[in-house]
Image 1: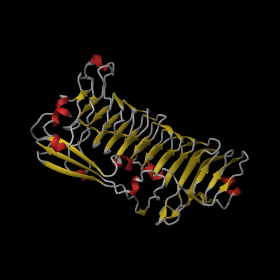
Image 2: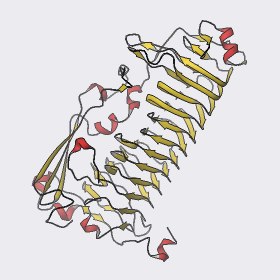
Image 3: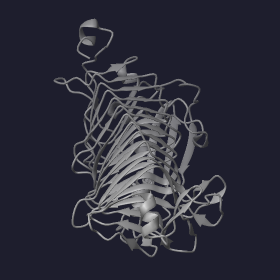
Image 4: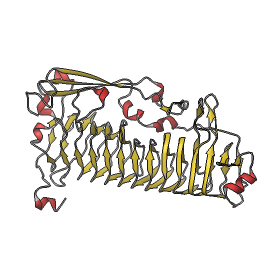
Length: 471
């Protein structure tokens, strides 16, 4: 990056400090909401600490230096974006339970209410779940064209009410919501818990709606679920939460104000829309796939991957978040033909074992409109730090990423690794868009560290028709 001059109206000698505050409060439609107690099983107790990330962006002579100071945990910001940490052990205390007899019987909501009227009551608005009801391992519940109303709990009451599937569930055109959701001083209910026991629990959920809940669907302990053409709306902790070796296959569904969270589990998301919602993936060693999705919102991150080898994110559009994609820990997915645009930062790569592969992506129009509380700052479209080493292209396998219209800093290598970013398209000379070692040798004392080299030659252009045929 060359020296001198104003860049995009940011004058020299501008000093900006940014605080990314702890995510500690949730208010939904004016209803008082309280987060669950933090599980003691969380070994790092991240949410029990006042951990803030303070980032200084210092612009002097139009050179950009970014200082990152982490209190207690370098990864606090990324992990704080992941609601799943709140449920590391998921210590639900359940209401008095009714178990079906485990005789291989298939039930409907009507037959269940007749069998257990104290647990499930038929009302004019649907079936009211008054206490936890468990479908045993050999039994099946078929729920079609109806509504399931979940009893909320008082804030001071640790008892949850939930429908638990240990056998099989077939749900179609089912609406699951909290009963009396406008009441103050109540916690919205949890919808369904699919959990394996000695055998594998399974669920097929089609054309269903989950709304006004704390958690929509929970999958754990080897259970498997397929979700298709469903809607998750205002599930303020998570629409789908899969952990402890659960498996969730999600297709053609809509998430609005509802996250999808995967922790130590398996799964895939295909052709889904996420509106003001996140996808958070944590500790996946079996690979994870996101394909053909559209994500648009204003939250901290669109897609967060922390730890986990393999996996693929492809043909997905991410727009409007602070971080379009955040990769940390030892996350090493392949990013192929994605579009990341109009976010404050397109992608952030953190951690010395974080080595994603990026090919044929479009990273455009990022960093142009940071969140208003950030002030007049310059943010890189691709930010590499703390030992991250993404593969953006080599001379053997060109990156063919289109990186343009991202403001004055398209890529910032804030680490010591040599980054390969060969065979990509930049709107102008990459040396004027990349902040790396040649730019900070005189400023090491100020910045506190030296950057690594970024190798960007040879260049590539999709407007060369011979190369375009290979794109």
